[in-house]
Image (cartoon, rainbow, N blue to C red; front, side, top):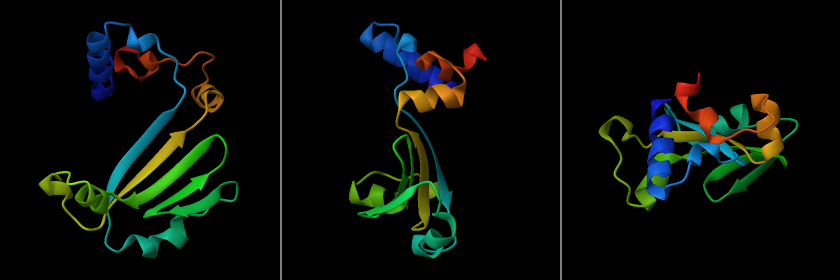
Amino acid sequence: MKDATYAVESISDLLRVPFGESTLTRLDFGSNFVMNHDLSLYQNCILSASRLKRVDRDDTVYLVNGQQQLAFYNKYKEAKDKSIIIPEEYNFETLYRYEFRFLKGRKIKSSLHCENPTVSLLDDSNS
């Protein structure tokens, strides 16, 4: 989590406030995957969950409830549409992104087993 530590320090320095003491009200995790086939082939297999409602919006599939959200979309297409330069190692039309989002503070509290989750929890120097 060196990136998290660097981000917390940079934001603190930029804003001149102790950003690490800020309360976490939303938390997202994500990763990119280079797949062998088009996203549509995987959707019915991996994008079903009994307690989450499926919502298809634009080119993204969401699985949602009031406290969390899963998103799965074509990261390559998104980058091309926004004219973002894609690093060569990720320059595949089948580059997909998966994101898991905690949308509510109480879900973050219960998942992290912490009554007052702050940004500093993401800083690896606290481990």
